[in-house]
Image 1 (tube, rainbow, N blue to C red):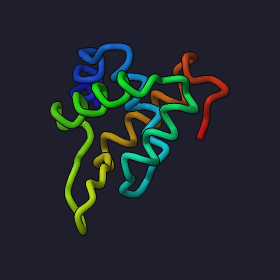
Image 2: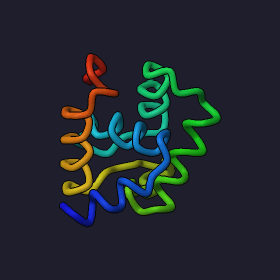
Image 3: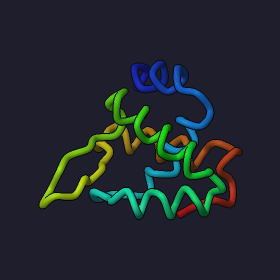
Image 4: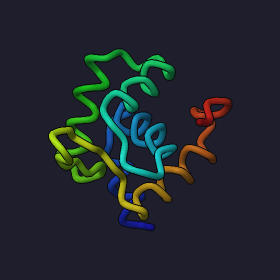
Length: 97
């Protein structure tokens, strides 16, 4: 987990926040689902798009085209780390799900 901690600490606040919020998805998810979650967490759409693209570019969120649509996912180890951060970080208190 030390590698994840190091990588996580290099992220900006919006990247940390979105990664932790998206860890609620345990299956591939659409951009629409992610956008809805981000809106519920008061993350403005332009910041959401930029941050999602950044997390994909950093390989913290995977993206692949399936049947003409892009599906996003977190690797199991990345998701587990982000879930732990979401559960233990005071910034996410009361914002489960």
